[in-house]
Image (cartoon, rainbow, N blue to C red; front, top):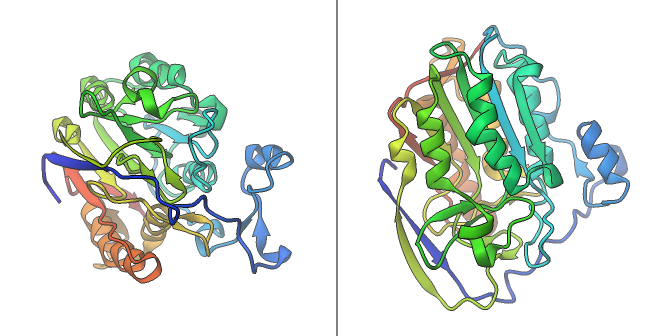
Length: 317
């Protein structure tokens, strides 16, 4: 859980890792389109129709006011490279996470940097984390919250992990992706009051919809965990090592994001003090995500909690 190392595996593309199928068995009355952006793109993308879940409705109003807090939300469902499979719920999860930041966690909408799908290019990652975010924060006053949902990939040459941007070629992750190590170094260099990172992604090269790196022989890669370098923050990730971050099709969300939001809504407040810390939330995630991944998909998925400040208050009611 607190390891400084992440292990990545590149596996042979196998027929049982076939592209995910569309939802079936839901009445049209139970399907919703989340957000204006999702609705606009759904006209040309029929996969952007989802069942309604409990986390989509009646988002609770928090008591925290964070006028100086800055949010970065990135969700990538569709990719320009033909070898990269969709992440069916990433854009939807990103748009919903924005709503929770505003309504439950007290962020101002104008303080949230949002990039979804074709907006989230490699150049966008460079702009946000190497300039824009530093310009948005007030030194010593701004808490920073970063959420990412999408693909991650390893590079076979330098044994490092990369975010797969909308225009990334996963076969050239080091040249066209955004380095996870650089991501944490840039965050650590900020003069922010605190940094919270939530990643619903795996960096193994595999995904719930298939392999990212084609024609790869089985190989095992160990890399230093760059999250350990974040001196003033906390990091919650959806999975460990070579694991796959699962999709929860019945609710139309990533499995990790679904339980993250349920926890934020109050399910993680086990001591009933009307506030939820990262440690409480992690405990709730560990009770639900590994169990559902085993029960529904016969796979291991173990969230991680890392960083120097592991008991930060995330939301109050």
